[in-house]
Amino acid sequence: MTPARLARGLYKTLKWLFLATLILALILPPLAPVLWFAYAAWCAVLQYLDYPMANNGIPFREQRRRLRQQRGNSLAYGSGVSLMTTVPLVNLIAMPVGVIAATLYWGRYLRQEN
Image 1 (cartoon, one colour):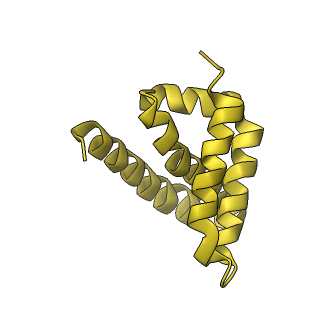
Image 2 (cartoon, rainbow, N blue to C red):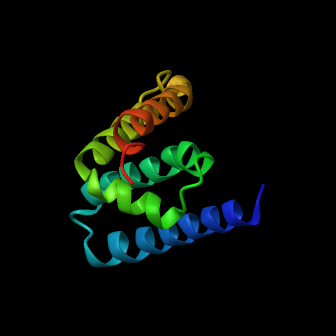
Image 3 (cartoon, rainbow, N blue to C red):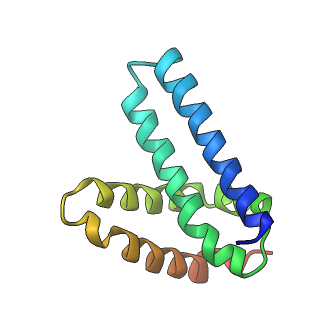
């Protein structure tokens, strides 16, 4: 594991923990389930699309920029992966399906952008 990939993973983890505890639990408790799901979908997008994008040498800031430009598609992908992980027995195939879908999403929608 390279230091850059380790730093990227640490950044994602710390950001996730901070936002989850501060915003959802303290500030907006009635909206917490909806916001939690939206944030889980965004984290799934960042996690699964990190592999094909990092393999093509795209830095993390550029990854986030590209995913923000395709926000609707990105959240739809992340929502699908998040929903798959919540259904018993379907969650067993969620990771391989998520990786395949991320690779297809990268190839069809995100690779062409420069």
